[in-house]
Image (cartoon, rainbow, N blue to C red; front, side):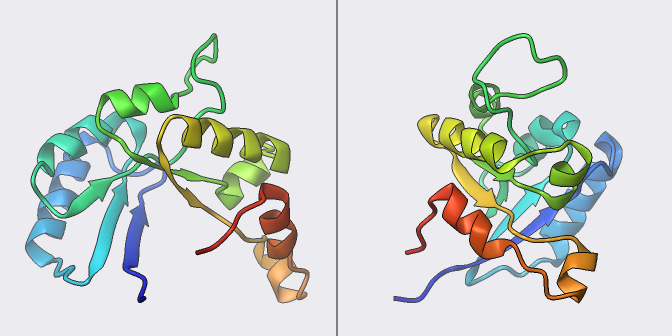
Length: 153
């Protein structure tokens, strides 16, 4: 059985609404994605616009992040339930910069994984180290896989 290739573009904290519309139009004109699954992860403020722009297209809109709780007093955060309500089915978890700048730990990421799965979301889980660690062959990927109890099929 061969696996389907996935190409995912994470826009991080770039592209406002107008830039999002322009980039989506360019992707639709220029992208030949036969044989692979194409995903884009615009900023939260552009998710609904991206979804509406890609109705009946072969590009999936995914979220860049999700909160570990389903609701509550978490100013500025977005839950799996909120994302699902606008049509998001996939989320990205474990970005290196969220680990570094927002102190996301293995425990927190495990909670995000559990909450996402409980809400029927598909997960793109980021593994990796900082560049300085890779350059010194100080790898953490195996410990991340073991901690998350992830299994690959």
